[in-house]
Amino acid sequence: MPVVVNNQKEVFQNIVASINKGERLLAILIDPDKMELERVSDFMSKVKASIATHIFVGGSTVDPFKTDELIQKLKGLTELPIVIFPGDVSQLSSHAHALLFLSLVSGRNPEYLIGKQIEAVSVLRTMNIETIPTGYLLIENGKETAVERVTQTKPLSRHDIQHIVDTAVASQLLGMKCIYLEAGSGAIQPITADIIQAVKEELTIPLIIGGGITSKQQLDNAYEAGADLVVIGTAFEENASFFEELNT
Image (cartoon, rainbow, N blue to C red; front, top):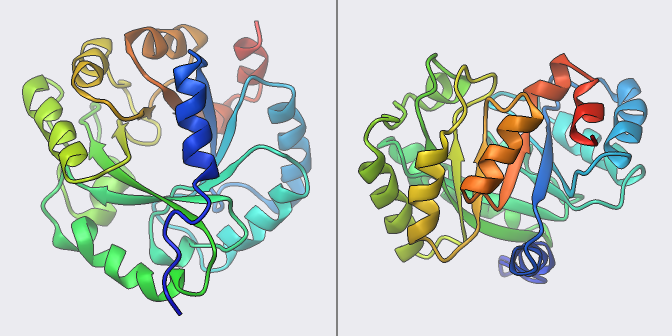
């Protein structure tokens, strides 16, 4: 049975169409290890009333089966696209609408550049899920992140903007459909406006920004600098009233 790659392309095409219309996209990242199923309904009622456009599901380390259980629960509570943001092959689920097929291009660990992706193919053969090839760049934020520990890689220096830009552009030239600049969960410092602007100026594909955004002002700053889609997770886990701030 052949692997279905970008079979429907609906999620990616809708992202591109929204960007072309000048819309600001916001994904709420839900970590299956941090979200109990009994809390999902209440959490999603807040998401529904917010400006969120996508739901991302994933984490650096997640117990087996938790991702699939959470996604099935979410699908009964929202019509927003549910996209897997995987930390491992065990987080794949046929119930999601799409998968960010990540390659950690900021690191040099072959397992996360191509090894895990090869391992995922045998699972993807059993699923009819849209895959979105995504170049994943980890940028230093002031503290060690879970991604660093799990992948055994170092982030790119936030001070070497040209290297960040070159890495992003190289990823696009290799055929990636999106670029994801990641400061990491609970980052002390989010991706700065000058980094976002410099990368966006040389890309022709969607730019995703995540990590360390904890205020409406930081969110607006990311959009104004050129972010097409912003991902927020920890801020909602630690402060449920952040939903209200976003809607003001």
